[in-house]
Image (cartoon, rainbow, N blue to C red; front, side, top):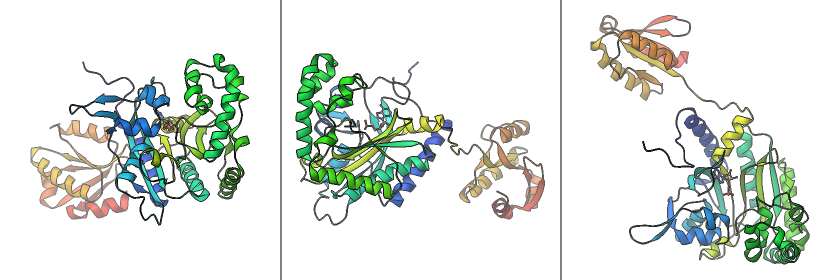
Length: 416
Ligand code: AMP
């Protein structure tokens, strides 16, 4: 038997319905914020993700699905959304003539070779969005607001936003230097990966899952102390705007995020201090890194799997419809045709209608009425049909109403 691959799963039944619900809520919200939908290809040139995400990141070093295709191209399965969207932005030369921000959102499968665990898979879906053009604190605030409202609308009122600023390039360089000086004496006490990070990108040590919580990390220099005046002002202004919008947050000076390209605002959304449900930030250097003209960018991504797990853990009532409106039963062979065309007509009028597709007898069809949890049923029989009539029965109250076949829609409209 061929089974599914480790870290992948099938989406069906109630889970499929829950995801469709989350999808609908998020899409509607993005439209309100005037973001346009985008999908980029699942596979791209490896260079895009390797360069875009950063060669020194765990993601590129350990997690990307890389392969050579039959045309000998180096290909990578999309591990995150931003790099592909930036490639789209550059390839379509959207940077020219930017009078308004370019705002897009996506909902895409991602692929990372990680150790699977609850809420962590090798194939997973991220909902996310990006804003190109503005380098304003207002655009930072809008991004945090869209992310926060997404969780709120999904019923996760207790999420926390952890907020930090890495500052501009000058501040970041100063901070990097301070970290190198600080970590140097402790280098042998850090995990193997962090010893490597120390050489390539010391900021990433703060992001380490192994050393997290150790005193060395806790006492490390804080970004906030290395922000230059301008960066500090900008960070304070962001906090003022968030206060004004009633968006709760906590400043977490250890937050640096795993990717190379962030500057100024970085943020993560967590539930009860642990669970990272999503993260984002500003990446003004990324477009240049990918050979585009220097253009500011800011964005966010949430994982579906963890968000739905969190909704279940928090007891959020996710509306799932497991009911149908009407089941059309055929007394004998001769009514099956009517069942078919009547079902088609009623479905096109917006009702959820089911008929027997398995050639079951009447008794079997009645069992299906209950299994499908149908609100109404009609037992189609030639005698009624000859008079152009049907009897609509409410399956709960057993109340019966005789109506003209042309008035079924009207009846259902008033009784659903
Ligand atoms: P990242 O792109 O790593 O910043 O992740 C953003 C969000 O995507 C995380 O907060 C998670 O909710 C989700 N995520 C990241 N990796 C995985 C994974 N392997 N499986 C499921 N969700 C993930």
